[in-house]
Image 1 (cartoon, rainbow, N blue to C red):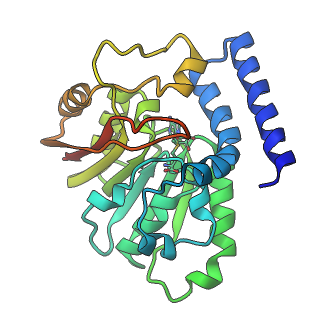
Image 2: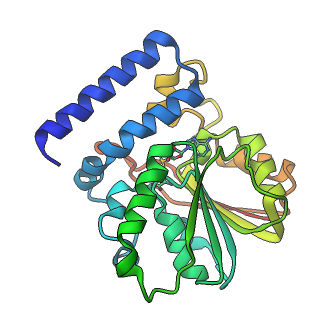
Length: 264
Ligand SMILES: C[S@@+](CC[C@H](N)C(=O)[O-])C[C@H]1O[C@@H](n2cnc3c(N)ncnc32)[C@H](O)[C@@H]1O
């Protein structure tokens, strides 16, 4: 990315921050606009950070350049047991990196849906996939379909999904509603592998009344125990957490977080 592009993006981010602050923009709207701009900005952030949650083998399977748009710090497929033909839902999929890795794991008879509220990211992911189509020929992967939808209000029929994955989105959702939705759309014995940051203690301020702090501080994150108890309330019979600290942005210490694994 050249400097003028970088400067342009920084100016857009400053303007965006001013707009949010001065107009007290509601959090759901601020989230969409934030990721529209940060989806671009993250290219240089990721290169500077020099950390990718994916193995070299996994990166080699992806269309060239797709990994540059990775905004999650985890790799949910690492802890997911896929079967050929599984139907998978990726919540907050961004450009669809984890969706695509899942599409290769479930093979041509499976189905993957990537859901996100930010249309520009879905569009970019779809465009990269279309242009990468020739290099993907011969790979046994199912098509990935992208839908613009919120993870806590899913336009998906009950008991139709085998596996839900998510990377860096749980803290942005209405957790109680989202866990109920995940429980509703999953088949019996279906699993969800939700990777994200967690709060260190329940005293952590959640910034619901300050959209900028919410966006830049992982505002809606909760503790592992809070997530576990909300998931049980939604009906999940098995709840497990695998802890993993990972860096999120340039200059950040690795943050507490990990993989919340739920079984219906
Ligand atoms: C940190 S990014 C992670 C993107 C992607 N999973 C990845 O690993 O690159 C968080 C994503 O969550 C999406 N998001 C935010 N709120 C959402 C919601 N309510 N429902 C679905 N997606 C949401 C954002 O648009 C953004 O793409």
